[in-house]
Structure formats: C-alpha cells, structure tokens
Amino acid sequence: MNDLALLVDLHKRQKRQGPGGEAETLKAIALANLQKSEPLRIADIGCGTGASTLQLAHSLNAKITAVDFLPEFIETLKDKAEEEGVSEKIKTLECSMEQLPFVEGEYDVLWSEGAIYNMGFEKGLNEWRRFLKPAGVLVVSEITWITNTRPPEVQKYWEAQYPEIATASSKIEILEESGYSPIGYFVLPENCWLENYYRPLQDGFPDFLARQKDNEGATSIIEAEKEEIAFYEKYKSYYSYGVYVAQKL
Image 1 (tube, rainbow, N blue to C red):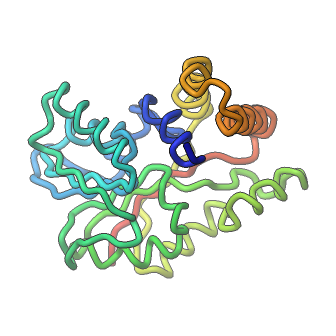
Image 2 (tube, rainbow, N blue to C red):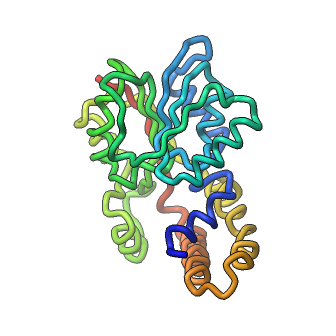
C-alpha cells in the first residue's frame, strides 16, 4: 500500500480532513448572505468526506456538486448523504480541482474549506472565477499568518510546506487583483484544529496501526501526524486558517 492509500485509510473514517467547524460554516453562510429561501447552485471543491457539503445541504435550498479526486472520500460522502436524507441535493464528482468540467457562469457559490492550497490560492481564484455567475460568491479557507512577525522556525516550516502562506491583508489583495470584491474574513479558532480535527484523528491512530500491522509506511505517517499536531500546539498563536468570503466582480 503506497503513502496515498495509507493516508486515505487514515482519513476517510474522519468527519473532517482538516480544521473546521459547524459554527464556522454557518458563520461563512451568514457572511455570504446566502438565504435558505433562494434556490442555489453550489460547488463544494475538495469536499473530502463531506462535512461542509452535508451542512450546506441541511442549511440551504441548494443543489450541490461535491468534488474530490479520491473515490473513497466520495463513497463515504454518498453514504452519509443517504443516512442524513439529503442525497437528492448532492451530486458527487470524482475529479481534480484543476480539471473541473464546469461551464462558465454555472454556479451561484463556489465553496472550498481547507482545500484550495492543493493547487495554490491565487491559481485557484483565477481558474475557478469563470464558473461563478456574475456577482456569485466565493467562500474559501486558506492557511494564513495571524501575526505580522513569527519565530524563524515557524516561518521556515510553513515556507517549506506551503510557500503561498501569507497574512490576511496579502490574501485579500490577491482576491481583489483576481476580480473579487471581499465581503468578509475571519480566523478559525483553536477548537476547529484540536477538538474538531486533531483529537478525533489521534483517536483513530491505534485502529489504523492495527489495520496496517507491521507496515513501516503507516508508522511513519503516524509519526509525521504527531509532529504536525505538536507543532500546531506549540505555535498556534502564529497561524490558522482564514475564511475568506468574496463576490465576483
């Protein structure tokens, strides 16, 4: 089993594949002024196992296209949608976010929690913009510096992990240069990382290692996850996900 398959096995049983929260998704819905009375077409790009997709389906009168390139995540989302009675609102699409088969102006809302980094913030903004209707809304979360200065080890770590990390003011400037008008911004709080993402992930480590018994790759992945969690716990004052809400000009 290769590293990607191991990561899928670890994460597909989790509600979330990254930091986030129900209250924060609702806050973004409110900032975007999305009304339940209005029929909407939404694309949830990089949906994972569907935490945000399912909440959007419950909260809005929407037809949602849920996109992820991993079939295991898509199958989990389908099962959850059936269980929660919202499958008629959700169409799944297994494809890369860099090769979306959408037509121009197809969607009222483009939504992407914790996923746009896979192709890069600026590239994603520019390539996805054409899929929005005029005055359509974009909601994305993106790793963001939440202080103007930080320890060198934090700077070095994130520049190696994701060179596009920047402050919110820089991200908002990129939004404006990419043809969007910013509506709102907020930072994911600590509980979105720890209680909602890292702690449930940690709870799954023993079962994962039992399934992957004597697999050195699995052991290495768990050690890397533990290091990531410890790094966040030590340096959480300096970075988080910023949630950006903007309107297509």
